[in-house]
Image 1 (tube, rainbow, N blue to C red):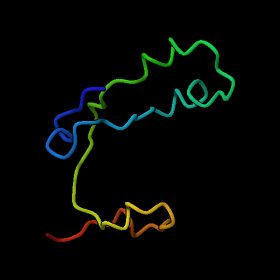
Image 2: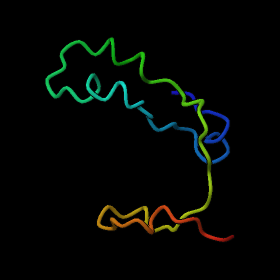
Image 3: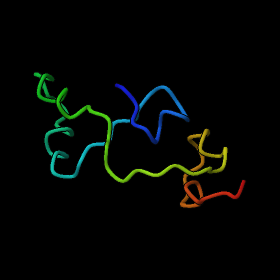
Length: 73
């Protein structure tokens, strides 16, 4: 998936951002026909923001709200 302008300077891959109205479609565990899911995989053009966070985000064992706290640079 192409990146949007916010993510492009940071990484060449774009995370999937699924809008709440499509959660029921996206989260069907035994979904057989994935063609309708492909339409949901588009670069997010909403109000995304980028800011530095702790490198603690790189370890799955870390799971607390401070992971997304803005760090000063």
